[in-house]
Each structure stands twice: as structure tokens, then as C-alpha cells.
Length: 416
Ligand SMILES: *Cc1c(COP(=O)(O)O)cnc(C)c1O
Ligand SMILES: [Zn+2]
Image 1 (tube, protein in one colour):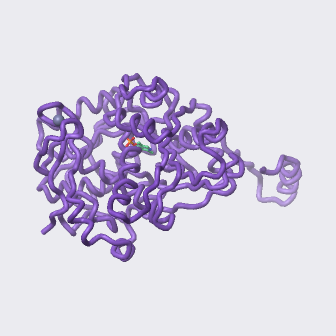
Image 2: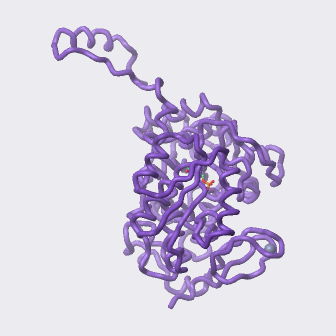
Image 3: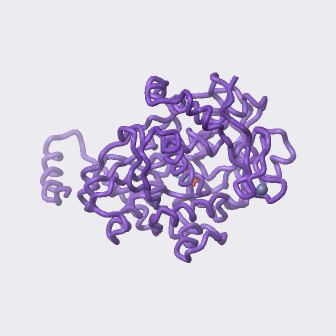
């Protein structure tokens, strides 16, 4: 029925493979990527067709790696993009936009990749789905697994935030808490994936899974009135999100759906886990693994699979690369909340803190149309800001006590 997918193609040696549940090249061990038939897609894809589609990321079905129309969706995507005037004013950026992906069904951008991966898993005939997660992916796989009736196993480091554990557990998956860091979880999952015939969304289904992140690029371009922004600031864990947002713009350009434009891609990582930023600082695309130590647990991947590609895109597009310490991450979360009313998780704190640094150092210029990607919700990582928020002022149900409180707080400084 559909001819949009030609096959899978090795990103390194370009060898072709069938569209199965495989992810590495047998010859050079490079990652496999979906190879589309753009000539075929171009014949029917128009702004009008996209705009009249569902109010989810599935409006971009023609550019997503599934054949079925019967996709697994719980209304992911089409999240708000808005002009962040108060934060922009504070940072000296007149054209700052926030893409708020913290309001997806399971409160992170991972709903995008999982909706695509599980739709593909079902059409490939799998009955069990699984993932190696830094937290948010486990929640998304658990929710979509429940909604589609899969048997679900999620693997995560055993020391994750309660919001991530409960946020996955509520959907009744098997949660495997591994005593180790993400890179160790991932290594174990590669072995499990070899042994059991499961759809591991970010292992054997990775070529399909990762395509879901392109929809962030598609949406931003559509929401800007069919144009790419000048500059994007994107947090990186495996580096996949950054590379795919960029790919999203390139595909729309190639199909004639947006004008040609050179979008600069900047990367944000935590100080305690910055292998991609380090590579860029050293002007290389060789990413040396690190042992993560940061409160931004959703970004704590020390050996990022797509790190070299992300580093190359940042360098090729003349983007910036910077990091945030734990204290700066907390300040970043508070800054975004105080200026724009958005409560982000630690990854959003990293993005906001790095955005601030890139603005201050002039890497982002004051009138560039810049989009900062907020990828996860603050209610998942309340531990990070506990003790750093307005305290509760407890009183008896009595007007005199309130007046006393009022006198006390009304002498406190007003917000800027
Ligand atoms: C997974 C994740 C990222 C990074 O995604 P990669 O594609 O692995 O780089 C960013 N933010 C949040 C909140 C995440 O959960
Ligand atoms: Zn190859």
C-alpha cells in the first residue's frame, strides 16, 4: 500500500537493509536509518494535507516510518510554541520562543518516539515491548504499552526520581531497576534484546523510534508559518533528538514545504555529563565516554549513540555548546518558571541555563528567532527543587493571623 519507505540504510557505509527490527550494519557496525522515497512522498504531500490531518504528530504520517494507518496514539505532539517575552527580556533576546513538550500525555517528548516505535512494533508483529530508559522513556513505553495492550518491560537505573518510577509503574509494566548507570542498563538491554524476541524501542527498533523526534522540527516549522527558526537550543542525552530536529527541517526543505534556511543548532548538556559538548570544544566528532554525575538524570548518558552525529551538526551549523552545573540547572528551572510559568524537569533547567549562557556570550544574537526545547515536566523531578520554592506560610483560620502574615510578606521584594 505504501511506498514511502525504501528500506534501512547504514549511516556510515550506506549499505541497504530491509525494514525489519534491526539497527546496526553487519559490515561496519554503523547505525541504520530509515531510507525514504522522497520522490514518492513529494507527489502528494502539501501544507494543506498536513494541516487537515489530526491534531497530533500523526499529521506528518507521510514522513514517519510506518505503513499502517492504524497507529498507536494517545494524542502526543502539537504542543505549544510561544513567544517567551518575559524570559527573552531577561536574557536580551527579542525573538525567543519556547517549544513546550512538557505537556505531552506522559509529560515528556518521549511520547513522540514511543508512539512511532510501538506503531511500528505492532505492524512488525511483536507482542512485547521494552526499553532502556533514563526515566522518561520508561513512562512513555509503559503508557503506550498499556494503551495498545502489549506486554511491557522497562529497564532503568534503580536510583531514579520517584516521579519517574511511579510515573511508569502506574501503567503496570514490569519495571526492572538495575543497580548501575544508564550505560550499564543499555548494555544489559542489548544482551536481553539478543535473547528475547521483543521490540526494544531504543535498541532493535531504534531506526523507527528515533524518527519520532523529527516531528518536533516539523511542528516548530509549521507553527512558525512554514519556516525554520534561525537557531535551536536542544538538550542532548544520546544526541538523537538534536540530530532529528535538524533532519526535520532538512526534509521539509527538500520537499519544498519551507524555504531553504540555515538553522544553527546549539547543544545543552549537564556539567557532570557532557561528552558531546566536550567533543565540540575539542573541535572533533570523536565522543569520549564519561561517567555521569548530575541531577539531570534524564540526560545522564555517558556514551551517547548519536553523540558524533550531534557534535557534527552543531559544528556544521555554527551552533554553540555549553553546560550547566547542578546549581545552574536548579536556577534554570526557577528562571523559566518565574518568567514564563513553565515548570520543567532538570533537562529543561539545563536548556534554560545554557540558553542564558549562549545569550550572554553573544553566540545567540539578540534578534535571532531562537527556539528553546523544553522536553520534560517539572513534576517528575520535584526532588531537584525541593527547598528552593516558596515555603508554605501556615496560619490558623483567623483574620488577625493573615494580617500579620500579610504585613510580613508585603515588605518582601516584588518579582522583577
Ligand atoms: C531523553 C531525553 C532527552 C534527550 O534525548 P536524546 O534523544 O537521547 O538526546 C532530553 N530531554 C528529556 C526530558 C529526555 O527525557
Ligand atoms: Zn555500514
